[in-house]
Image (tube, rainbow, N blue to C red; front, top):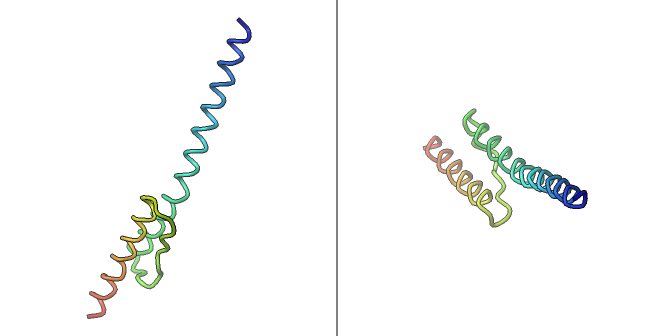
Length: 77
């Protein structure tokens, strides 16, 4: 009975750790996107937005950079 309880506690700890790792993996790239959007909103259209990788966040950064360039071009006209 104690073994089952210990395994349950170990499983719960593993679940908490895994959830924290997933959160941290997602949090930083999302914070970077928010910072990029904030810079654009404040009028900074000169800073290039990096889009390294092939995941959804990189795709979002790529499209934000395209938007930034088009806004910059529109304002320059």
